Length: 140
Length: 493
Image (cartoon, rainbow over all chains, first blue to last red; front, side):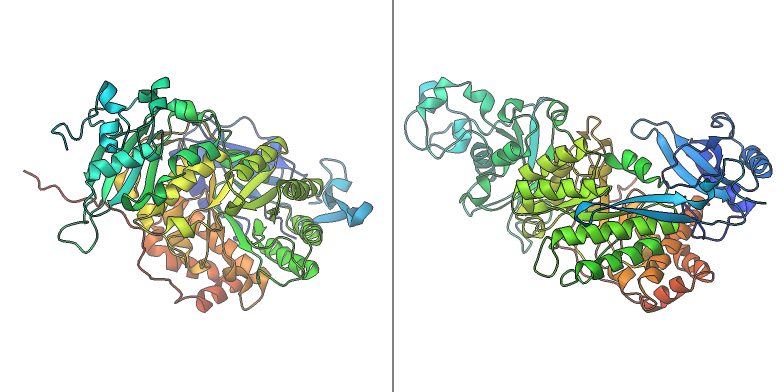
């Protein structure tokens, strides 16, 4: 199962050239690009691990692409995403976020239902991967 | 009439019992310089035959502030000059009156002192501005075109409970329009069947599905049943995609008590969003906006009923004013036009409405129908919703006209897909992502759009089918609501 978080998950995996063009777009808007990775793909896992801090002063897509590739090389079985932060007043939030690496196998999620009174159900979305300890979740 | 007609009568003369023209009662002040703290309205006035435009403007100022039809001595117990609204400028509307087939119309600028309005109350604001004057005999027709709200008054409103920024953070969705659909058929589905549509559309790739405006609690489906099945669908779709998903649960009901009860139940079930209809009224909208802020809920507003007073160019309220009031009242989503779909919407007018909802500051832009600068005083932004007769084949036009902070709602364009609802949703999502990708790459999506879609469809049969099914569907009708001002070339010297 292919998780579809991020801006471009319904398209075929982006090539390096396509990723570079998106990074260039972010830089041209004046946004700071950051690389993040995780092996916990829960939809509300907001804080992925940071691959360094956002690259506020790096304005060269090729330089950022090197960081993307370093991260992918170090964590080939993790999800890696590129996020662009906008610091202008009224935004001050991510303006882009897209996945650039995913594990070869994506087992997906279970839905746990806890039956309660009045036909009410408490739902829990549980990634199968997180049954295992961090770092041992996706076999290579 | 005396030779001093048109200027304000002084002292005892002003308060002599009887009827005097509004202009002479102090409601026409051509020399008035509006204060930063004044609220300014722009009305389009069609005076009755024989009524001069300044007197009509003064009458509108009078009837929307302190005046009654005759002189009252009790004015003299008050600081009446402050409370009188002042018409200070009247301009003929281009392309009306002599030589055209339209009655002469005038734009009247009227200033209201801040003290005329209760803080934070759309009900009070509108009771003044649109309370009485629209049925007034001296004008044949009247339309409220725009309103400049002073920062001091703006700050007394809560505004959207969530806003575009926080909505995106909560949903973890950035850099692209959101996708939605309204469940169809809007009436008759049982709760179980209804939830099926929701599940299929969300799993296929939409972010939101929506109740329609008239889905409340009818014999074929009790509201509780709908809420329970919809939340099963939402959670199941979240587990099948790894994304946050939502369904706008419509809590519109006959009383506030019932609306609160339904909203509380939606919260208990873990819904991220609820919805109400415009027809519940300004006060109920502000109450639900407060409830939504308190309960971390996104509040969607369907503009049900607005066409009864926003559509005709010579009478009613322009939708940009409604949009402004709704951002102040505090809604996170509002239906605001598609340009290319089946509902009314000239591109210039829609641009003005979208800017009203999304920008921190609006510059005057006559071509877009924006007569004033408007400072939003840090109120949150409202997400416009484009809904009605749009499909995947128009994606380049939608992104071009509406930008990326918008919910694109493809109802028929999802549910009517020949391969099923999931395929319909996937077609829309693929078309959207391909178009955003191409735009960011610097491609000219306006001209290359159809080719970009065809290329994306090579990897996606549902998109190919959608493009073939709806390729010739457009709605080319003349808009009734069009700009009064168009830019013209200035000949260079």
